[in-house]
Length: 64
Image 1: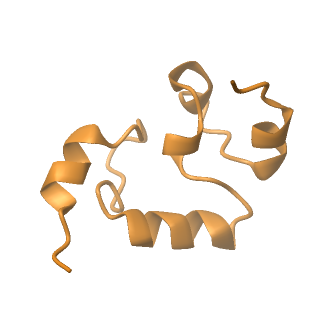
Image 2: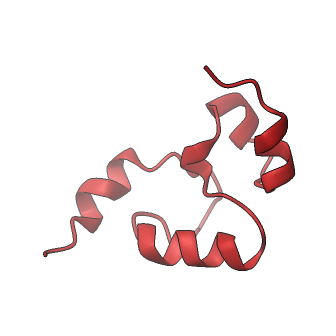
């Protein structure tokens, strides 16, 4: 399977400046799992911007 990194990068919701994992979902998930976090794409835009990617915050959100 060919990685669609450039395609994914355009849609990536991470707002962290200079993120070396932008568009590299496998690396992103691994990084955040190691830190008991979730990637930016799991959070609404207004919540993602605060850079708190904790699993605790995600569980507190009332997502529909």
